[in-house]
Image 1 (tube, helix red, strand yellow):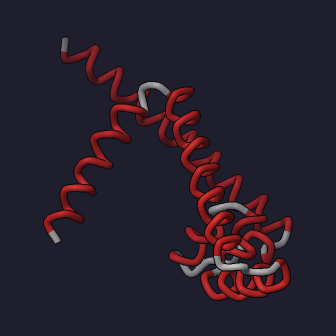
Image 2 (tube, rainbow, N blue to C red):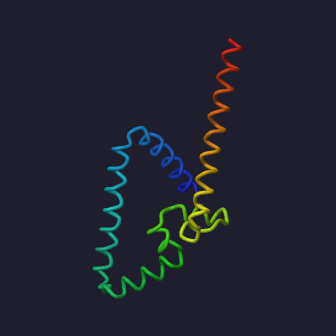
Length: 125
C-alpha cells in the first residue's frame, strides 16, 4: 500500500512538472505508449498467440471494459457514463445543439461574473 501511495505522489509531481512543457510531455507519453504496445506485441509472439486469437481476446476485453466504443468515440463516453448521460452516439443533433448552447450560455455567465468582479475590485481600490 505504501508503494502505491508513493507512486501516486510521484506521478502527481511528474505530471505537474511536465504540464509546463507540453511538447516534451507529448513526446514522453508517445514513446511510452509505443513501448508498451511493443512489449505486448512481443509477449504475444513469445507465447505464439495467433492473429485470430488476438482479435477475439481483444474484442472481448474491449467490449467488457467499454473501450471498444470509447476508443472510436473518445473519452466523453466515460464521462457520460459516470453522469448517467447518453453516449454521444445516442444523442440526437438537437440534444447536442442544446448542450452546446448551454455551454455557451455558461461561458457568457462566467464572463459577466468576471466583469462584475473586476468592477468591484476597481471600486475597492
